[in-house]
Image (cartoon, rainbow, N blue to C red):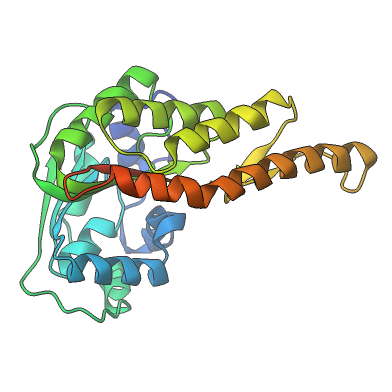
Length: 280
């Protein structure tokens, strides 16, 4: 039995990605590891709500760039969506093109209010998502854990291809692997520069800058700053957390105002980029 190798450190290295996927177990017993690639933002309850909403809006054309072994492309295709799943690793694409009984079992657990109006389809193709794929073709793009560790120049080319691929009024959803602080702000800036509307972009930039200026080590968990490696209830901890909480209060006080401003910037042609963090 071949040994599973580690995920590549250099996410631009296509050879290493193929080696990585080739080393993973891909039989029926691998279901438990595969299902984890749903990501934090795609548990079954949220997934059903999301699919219902998209079916109701007739937003049926979906792209999963950097799909890997995710079950999501198969799930969406089973419920009437026209799905493209792409990856630079041939092994990942071969996996997407095979039937998996465990994923069939997962699909059977999904109960939707809206029934699809037609049959779905899954198109699984080898493609480098840093290069142009299609133009104004997709209603929604789900980039699930496939951009977080790219170098800045590859993030930018990825953002550009995603922007071009979306229809006017489309959404690109980026689920990120524990991305924090400067890197999160860097990605937001890149998305803004290529033309996406990033909700609360200016306010989020201000928030992180204010937190960073304190010099207090923190991580953001569901938008709330948390201080790691501090002895809880110590004097130093209490002083530090009070400072961060005051900044957070100012941030939240501005959310409603910023929301109204955001709505004025958005129309039926605006391409929106949404970011969410997953912890691994």
